[in-house]
Image (cartoon, rainbow, N blue to C red; front, side):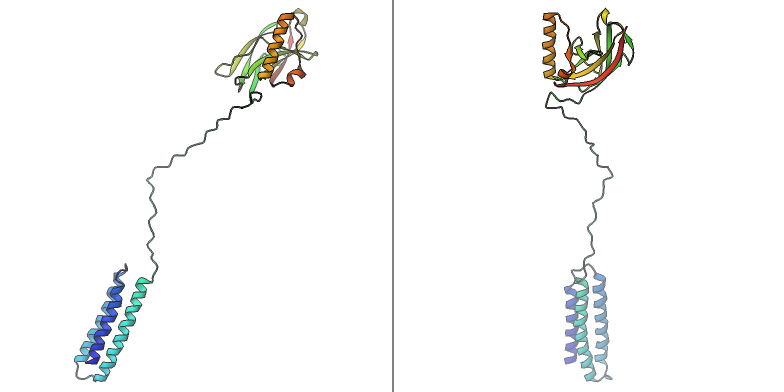
Length: 246
């Protein structure tokens, strides 16, 4: 009788440990272990019912089942609960629509100091070495001359080195082209070499130029401005073309 009780206790202990681990996601191991214990239990129940087996041997076998049930139960519990989870959360799937890339746009800042400039310009008519008459239409391209700055032409008679302003500030068209009338001396300058200068003037240079023009009108004397005086002001010379008076 004691052996039979030990048998039942062994089965219950082993199954209790196994079912305690039933929260695992490996039911196949649970069923295998339970099946093994039940198979051993059936064998021992048959053995108990046999008159040929000595009761002492049955008792020893029952105690063995008790120990085996507990050991197998703990082993299965450890295998089920002690294994690290291999469930890896799925990576988010792409919708297939590429994320639009916003290209940065570069807008150069306007100079906060009106005396500074990043303008460019060129005289395209007349060309270098050309023979020109007294009255001309000069043309070219320019970019970056922003108010309050202005675009002007100057005539320099060589080898004197003094600069004479043109007929006023040059307006820029939408395509960055410009044209301006220019008077380049009277009959006394025929055959003389001269330089046409394209310049970007800041507020100080414009004020000085307006003062010079007013003095010229009042006195009637055309004396020009020394290059050194203009260089000391907010003037940027953009281009120069050497030509000859007809």
